[in-house]
Image 1 (cartoon, helix red, strand yellow):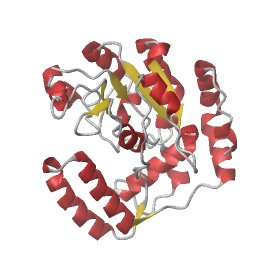
Image 2 (spheres, helix red, strand yellow):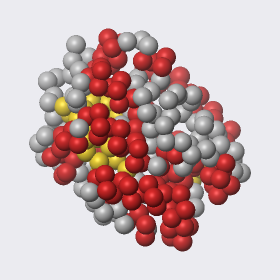
Image 3 (cartoon, one colour):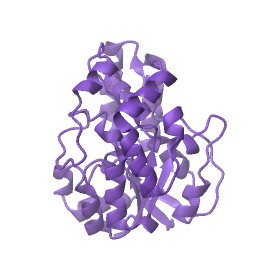
Image 4 (spheres, one colour):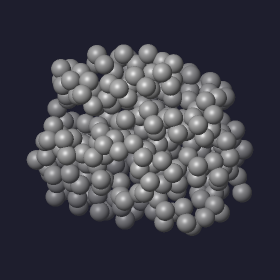
Length: 288
């Protein structure tokens, strides 16, 4: 059975869906048919064993150089890196990070869109309730606890992967440097993955929105879930984007003053430690 030789492990709401759609256009890259397998963070999935996991990579493989999957939840849970190492060995790990408070706000709106957060919930109030935890040793669900702040405290999450896989095997990309308004820049990722340059079309990302009609959104969502198992991943994502584009609207953006204030309050110390760990200037998060 073939084994993955790279994983993108997160962060959630940091462009991993866009990255999946872009890398999927390379002749050198083979992804599991389903984008997010959730094998390493969910105990019920992990207990099914290695053979079950590897069976996700049998279809359509045609000798591509790079074999992998993208599950954004892998970054957050402290036990996942050792599980990956034990199953796959020292593979390449790709991490994409986004301005911490903007990532948190995107997750909040994503939860509202899928109605696991109250429709009238206020972001400023909800993040005050949020428990701040840097070592999470068990998985409960994709939406509870929320961990809006904790999932944006990147230092410990990234450090765990570097300690387990070695700095040479971990690439940390910054959302704002990759997904610019005028262009998408993935050259450093291509170099890290050691694949050939390729032309790609930018495709829709998994943008968090808020619903115009909860009832209609729910009805179409039920239909989509029933057919997901029999349609290709790219068609499923196209249907998801159609539902969101037509039944949802973009939420109001955080203003610059709020971004700076929230990052200063919740994330400044973590950003400083991350800058030291990565030897990288992240001042763009402090001013935008």
